[in-house]
Every structure is written in C-alpha cells, then in structure tokens.
Length: 81
Image (tube, rainbow, N blue to C red; front, top):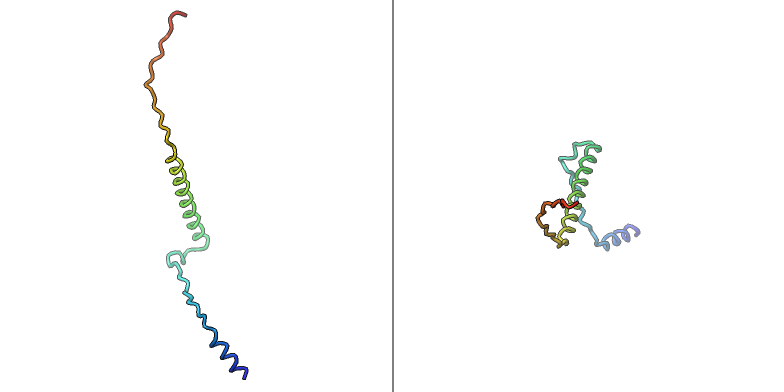
C-alpha cells in the first residue's frame, strides 16, 4: 500500500532538470593549482589594464579644448637699463 502511494507520488513529479556534465579544460587540467592561479591572476590583471585604458580614452573624448600656441618671439633685451 505504501509502496503504491510512493510510486504515485514519484509519477506526479514531472520536473526533470537537464543537467550538463562539467567540461574540464584539458589544457589547464594538467597544471598545478598554483600554476592555474598564476595564469588566472595574469589574465585578470590584463583585463583590468584594458579597462583602465578604455576609461582613460573615454575620458579624453569628452575633452574639446585644443589650445593654439603662438610662435615664440625671441625676447628683446632692453639696453636702456
């Protein structure tokens, strides 16, 4: 009787998630944890550097001031002193 009830309950449960197996990165799987961490850190630093450069360039785009420099005239010495 209880087995029949359990079977009916299991059949009523219709949710069946589609779970994918995790894929290992074959290239990094042979490396030690310390080496993978070093590679991760280097990639992170490269990404941060790119973001900094992009922000710098974006900030310069807003600058519209373009100074015009006059040619420098040689100073004339006053011989009256």
